[in-house]
Image (cartoon, rainbow, N blue to C red):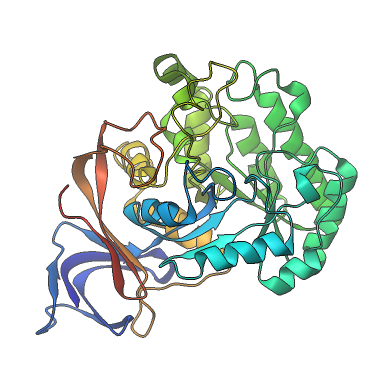
Length: 410
């Protein structure tokens, strides 16, 4: 098949051209202007072809909460959002805290059309007490270790984890909220910024002393951004992510949307939002990570403090970036692709370039097209963006040369 008249962007190889792209047998065969071809032709004028999106932080809810999402439905959500590579978190019910559980996941996902990298808990039962066996997990192919949903409160356990991370070259993905500051999770007033600041401060100092490979998840505060910026300037190696939710919303929106915008850590002020955008633009923050968190209507209607935290975001992450970064002239399309496609792959040690001879893992989008996000392709609908007119339409998602999603204008 051939895609004609598209703008083709791959920031990692400084590619930004208007051309045709030919795919045969799952591989990119030719990139040139006016390619002659007798087979299947798609005209993508006004559209961009880029490396497909990659997410370092999603929740697919199998094991105990499959009515919210499964690996199968999560896959459909991902491809509707332009993603072909997803790292799923381990805080399921029961948690994925062992090699046996990890292998069970591999059976569930082996026939799915996208690449799912299942993380495993840093500590057994996510209790923060007994560290997992990093060596065995490394041998099994685990890319990410995390107790996401809970911080590592014990400095002793964190030090042990950092040493193991350094020894076995394993990524620790950290939920940085100190519970001693939190009265009720999910809101700026009751889960204040000090909870995030204190944990980031501690863990930067520990990395300086003991080494290790860390990713600081879902940043929410301007102070957190500045701590990471200063650490990177001093040569500390670490990754950081921000969610589309924290780029799009502020605490003022919570008044309107209520528990739909209850997230951990909470959305904060507009000043914080702009600091997150600045951190993303200057490289302090490496990537946009969805933190896709499906919940039932019932779970989001348990009242202000008992309702579950989190919202769905894989399908709308790109639109959030277009509307709050590109349209507001903070970042270019190349820069958005960098933080949604290229940098997340670096974190997970995956390579994908738009070059002749490379496999075709691609997303095609129209940055200017508006659409109504009527409903999710998954099982849950917990997002303030459901029913809203958004901008930045995913037109096609391709994995290994196969079209997994093809927008037909619905």
